[in-house]
Image 1 (cartoon, rainbow, N blue to C red):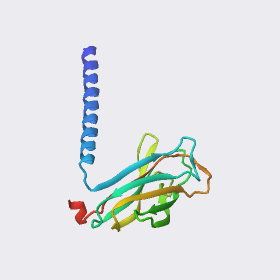
Image 2 (cartoon, one colour; image 1 turned 45 degrees about the horizontal axis):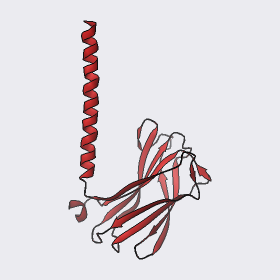
Image 3 (cartoon, rainbow, N blue to C red; image 1 turned 180 degrees about the vertical axis):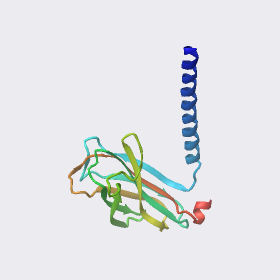
Image 4 (tube, rainbow, N blue to C red; image 1 turned 120 degrees about the vertical axis):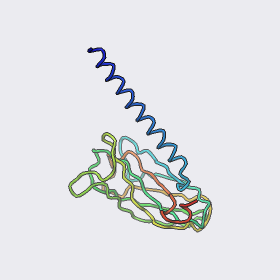
Length: 176
C-alpha cells in the first residue's frame, strides 16, 4: 500500500514536470512565430553592479519604414535593487548618423514597495514603454545605447537590461 502511494506521488510529479516542459516549449514556439517582433535582446549587467560609465548597446536592423512600432525598455532586477525606479539615458543613432538623446524613467515598484514586474524566484522582469507608435524614417541599423542615470555610481540589483521593438497593437504591420 505504501509503495503504491509513493508510486502515485512520483507519477504525479512526473506529469507535472512534463506539463511544465510542454507549456515552456509551446510558449517558445509561439514566441518564435511572432512576426510582430523585429528586435528583442538583453545585455547582462555585471554581478558587481552597473557602473555609471558602462553602456548597454543594442543594434536593431530595421527594414520596414511603413509600419508603426512600439519600443520598450526591459529590466530584470532582484530584491537587492534599492530603488523603486530606474532612470536611464537613452541615445539612439539612426542609419544616417542622426543622434537623439532621451532621459527615461522606468517605474519598477508600487508605492508600497512591491515589485510591479512578474517574477521567478527573486528575479523580476518589467518593461516600460520608451516610444509609442513610431515609424522608422530610414531602413538599416539603429543603435540604442543605455546608461544608468541613477545617483549611485555603481548600481546593484539590476541583472539585465533589454530592448524590444514590436509592431504597435492594431497597426497594419502587426497584422502581417
